[in-house]
Image 1 (tube, helix red, strand yellow):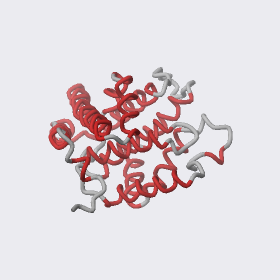
Image 2 (tube, helix red, strand yellow):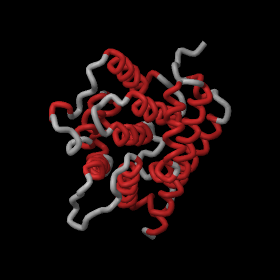
Image 3 (cartoon, rainbow, N blue to C red):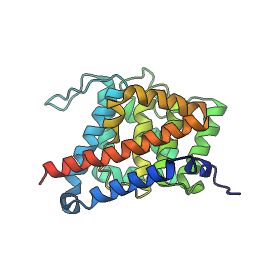
Image 4 (cartoon, rainbow, N blue to C red):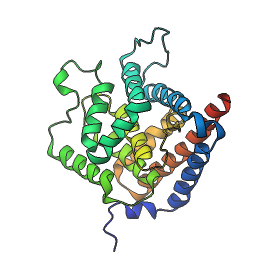
Length: 249
């Protein structure tokens, strides 16, 4: 019997094939001629598109001001997170995420929720709850190597668990989606952070929320639905990345 706690998820019907499809799509977009030499620019565009869509999923504005400021606090936080997922900042954050994922999550929350909480002491601090602490500890172990499931499955679990657990006072959605991106980067699934799965999640926001509720239920059907939706979004996010690269030719 496998000691991998996530192994049963990878064996759910259709999951392995969907994970392979997402992996192949992201691998292909990394081989796009533009991304072979200019991925720094396309990655920045992907991060910004992802940030705007992530904010919109949580009811934030998608309007970007020319002066770089954001009137909407949800969008402001999501775009600060987008900046942390770009360039040298991404490399630094990924390094922390690999060895101390809770520190990386705290950093993401400080960026995402800075304009949403009245008490600055809440920034980066999960709720003081035994269940929250135990589940975050388990999540940290999974991120740092306690599972060998395909990266899309782990990305789905990290994303879904953070949504279900809602460990912070605010901005859990933005943090969860950013953490999913960090899994993709740190695992080598999307090393240059080119994909934009948030666009699909926003376009299918009702399905996204329903599937997240299904994941939180813990039933095999609910878990499968969420993982398959994640794989679909990663696949579609690769297509979005390809359109960014095509436009940059």
